[in-house]
Length: 326
Image (cartoon, rainbow, N blue to C red; front, top):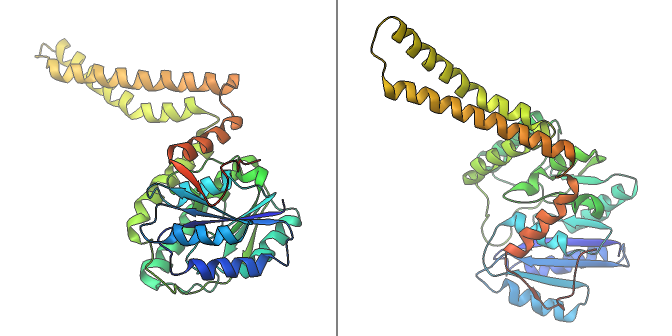
């Protein structure tokens, strides 16, 4: 199969018909062998019902359903896991991404790139709550990860299936896919894409997601910088505790030598800090041993994605349950 279009949906009953028609119109003539995968992320409206009806009339449309809302990244991971296409395109289901840009993204993949990221150069969002935080986040992500993407938050992206299926997705990691995949050295490109104002419903995004992005950014930095040298990383964590313990124990010894009273609670805290630092260093040494012997490597990543899929109680809807990923 040439192309799979994966679209997570959450309470998009008003837009799903137009979304389906727009995607079909954009890809039907360009890619004879394609599929569309709608993933209902536990919607509380008729999103799944309408999607299932559309799937009943079109064998190229497949619908997956979560029993409750798990978030965009798990929904996207489930769709990617069940996609059969050699090229996988992801996009939002709120009609702000334009399916007419899909052929341009796929064209870049066919030029030899592994990941193509959409750039909403003329973004139709609120300045204070969306544009400014997004610009700051994109700058910060580029500095921390070393992958300077102009628009990490744009869900309209295209991937080689063999690349994206080996990238673990959890939390809010879908926006960090280029940075996560950069560990394996793929070829990345950016393409200007259209962006439209939301026509139906309300946005699911806001400033409340900032802290999640920051936590995930810390995770990316740790994985990218320290995954191959865990002893170094754990030693850095252990250093403050080790310094504190040395100061406390030295202070207690000096006090005893000068004939003063030793506080057992203070001396005990020094021993506790020393033990904690020792545990961290030993943990780093064990991690180093595991990494060097190859017990954990990139081959484990597909298992992580598969685990996310099973943990989300995913069900097939409107399609036989034998749709396994390649």
